[in-house]
Amino acid sequence: MSIELPLVIEPNALAAQRECPELLIIDLCSEANYSRGHLPGAVHVAPKELMSGQPVVVGKLPTVTQLQQLFSRLGLSDDKHLVVYDDEGGGWAGRFIWILDVIGHRRYSYLNGGLHAWVAEGLLLETTVNQPVATDYTVTIDKSPIAEIDDILPHLDDPTLVIWDARSPAEYDGDKVFAAKGGHIPGAINCEWTQLMDSQRQLRIRADAAEFLAKQGITSGKNIITHCQSHHRSGFTYLVGKVLGLSIRGYHGSWSEWGNHPDTPVEQ
Image (cartoon, rainbow, N blue to C red; front, side, top):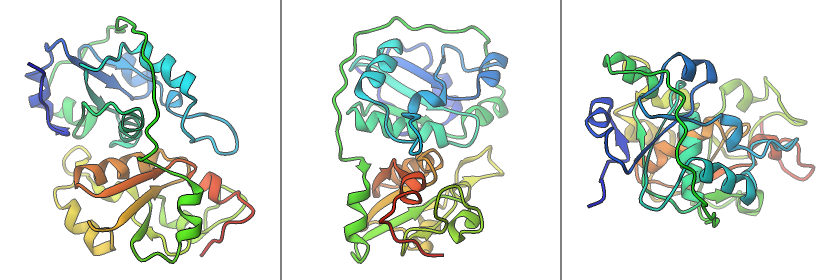
């Protein structure tokens, strides 16, 4: 019988399951933190492996070949249940979960609070560099979790569309500019990614996330597209949207595409 884990799992619940052979734990912490100590059995993935890295839109989805190499190295198979965590509150973990949605593998969980929460519970760490048994994994792309510029530009006046800008207020307002143009997509709602983290509970997803977002105008019944500069920070906001059952997609071009495109309007 297949293991059944919730989308968001707490550290002690994961610790009780860590001997399960179907479990594949993915560490997206810095290399230094992985070397210093990680969850037993966890396999490290460098965050740069989750992005194409092609300038100027560095955050776009990697190629199918790159994804096949990554998931074959990780030993992915249909029976594996992945648990993903990082050391920053969920940005890279959320980005990884977005990619799992894109390749159609939906057996996954997010470790709530990541490494910080695991350590706070006093649970075991190890320093072994884990290498899974590789597979020959074939990637197929499901475009439904992906938002492109053409999903936004012609629909800026659509009242059912919500653009969730997960960047800082300074970036949103155009005071900090990391592209040819500063500001934000017209009509976008700014809700910085860290506002969805509970700083008193090791950066777990805040318990009142649904109510908090509703006050910002980010609600169920809307078609939500989330972005940041490179779809890293908005990896976490995508994840939160999934947890809350929202209809949400990730704009992987993000501001590095919109802010450098000659035909995109901006507001400040």
